[in-house]
Length: 262
Image (cartoon, rainbow, N blue to C red; front, side, top):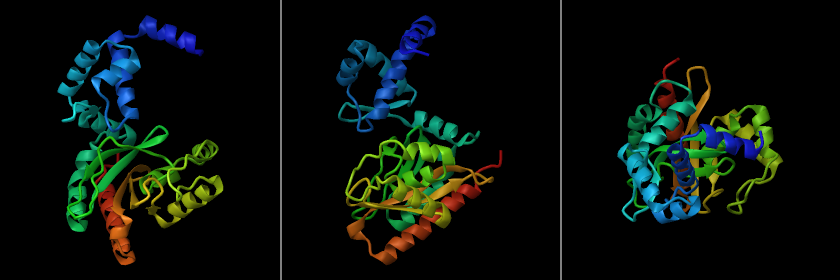
């Protein structure tokens, strides 16, 4: 279908206010740091009053959140729905995982986050801040590339083989000197992850941020999400990194054991 035909169908069958709402949500998806009413109005060529009314309605339903600086980001209601869709199951993945994630944060002193696939990216659907002096604080709704990061590589590694091949044939942006952008090396890394059952990130997306990740799976073994612990590399000795790896594997297995067989 050509773009012109697609646009004609949108105009003929679409509901204008819903079209604007989806455009706003798409813009917020691309800007996890947040957007202002002014910037959304300028981007979409929609009056600010219209943008405000839509955002106000979405905010009332927790689909978006308004930060103290006046910017808007995706909200918990939308992310909760996304977690259910991504797992293809009639259960609340976030609610199921939160008690285990909370305990993991208390045990390690480090933050942890739960991530799911979102088209050609990875999105954080739940997180717990760490209590340590240098602990990180991942943001719910934050999006990461599919080839850079422990959780990202864990999810990528468990796609169908043809989907992985298509992804490796596309562009692989470099974020730090450690980002794996060679398709052959990345393919080897993904194979290693599948065999060992966990993934690591040594500054592939953020130079000083390392991470370990483990899979959250259904009773049939299907990949649903990735649980990961990001941490500042300079703050951890090898022994402590190994401990974090073991704890995230244990926590991910605990979450997996509670997922119903449906």
